[in-house]
Length: 415
Image (cartoon, rainbow, N blue to C red; front, side, top):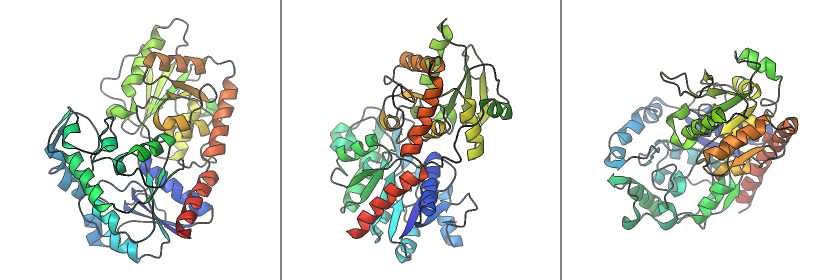
């Protein structure tokens, strides 16, 4: 079986890292997998970027999105900080995909003008599409809290926070026009699978749930003191870890909710005096005043430094409002560090309440603080850590996830 994985890039960014890990998991489990990307960052020979100068120019990460963002997207007026991808520019990928010897094409995150909506329809190979957000069944938005994706994008159900050109309706109608034949969908969580089933566009499409794979040999427990020493972190205080690309810039990651919850801990005389560790951003000019220190680790771009960060912490907090999966949660748990999160969206598949972490009431910052306190003061803390590691070994280890992918691929090929 030859599988061709298509992704915007390979080893930088959550969705791209997930695609690259899926690619490696398949190869380690006997599948002839290759990966094609617009922007190749790794030196992996099994990953290929655009083959010609013209295709490299067309795939340029800055040129193509700017052509769209500075024209079409700017016509939409919205106060929501959400990525929008109209996906209208044709690419050179389709011809190459169709001429390849791949048995299955596995699409991952292919927006930001890598493949157009029309391009996807022109692929003649069997397609399995792994969703990393809500874009496929929405309009141009990648995440949303409104119900247009359930009802259909009509003139009368546009949210009040939007005005100007209705880009989301225009994009959704474009998908409806070109995607007549259902494709096999893989979602990384039950929440996202249910969204697909409830959507107006894809309710009759086949869906399978397969979590993001993780190499449990790269992410594993190590001595906490050694991890803290290597990262220049204190050894005598509880450490709370938070991590997200861009830190607080993405409101969906819930950094403001984390800060609000930590203020409860500061005011609680019974709570331990923790310190906060943040990765994914550098120290800002005006860091928040929590009444206790904040350590900024900056951008951690490899598994070794991430493993150190997870092992240095006593608890990982993932206060996201929406997550298709929750990769930082699974990475932390693979290292034996319990996770506190809100009991919503993709994190419900990873964290088991009071077993390997704590699921707070959505989006109750006081309960989130209670959860952090519960983990830090837990008499059976070592058992929480063991349970966290065991959960990942059982459900998200490379071998487990690769088998699930292979089962989906074989099912498609039989058809």
